Image (cartoon, rainbow, N blue to C red; front, side, top):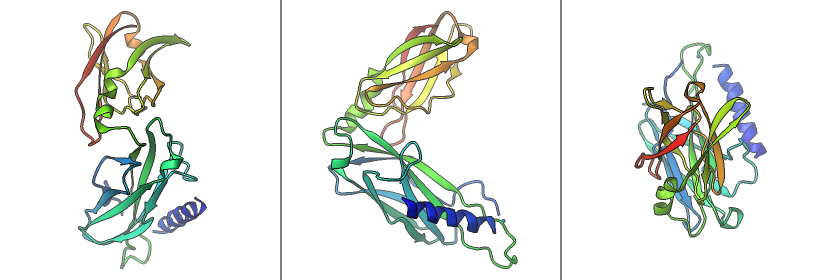
Length: 244
């Protein structure tokens, strides 16, 4: 929304005047992902302030392309104050009529800390504000956690060659996004190689391809993969043989 863009722009300009670096966020979500069901009245998202001092916190939602307009979700509160060493709560409400009814959809939840102004420095100290992002998976009526957990077992793999490169294409016939915890390939006599683009999810009823390193072109290989579950843990590893 335009209001959100204005607020974030204001924050960025304000931070430019300010100087202290931190290696991690003081304010962060307590989970690595959120699953919201259309049948629930609301979904709570717990956040925590690990710092001793209070922080203002701004939160917003985006789609995977970074757009925050006309989303089928309502997030409250957009801005809140969180005291030091305390927990807070965000609330997500799904607008059921505005989401796909035959598949899962996914969005980003961004949590931006707004550090307190440093005192006694004449205003010449830079304070780094850290932004955390986690995925929000939205499920319409009829989709279940148990089915999402087993969706990775239904992936179909195909080797494709184009432009001098070799690709593995994962076709996903299920209504769920699949997030890989592990996606690696190994050939006899060679070390196992993790595929760097594993963070690209095979979408529901769609496909996603992954580039194979040139050192592995030709011959048979074993693909090993696992999926991240609703709680952020990694499920059982799957293996399949492919010919490169």
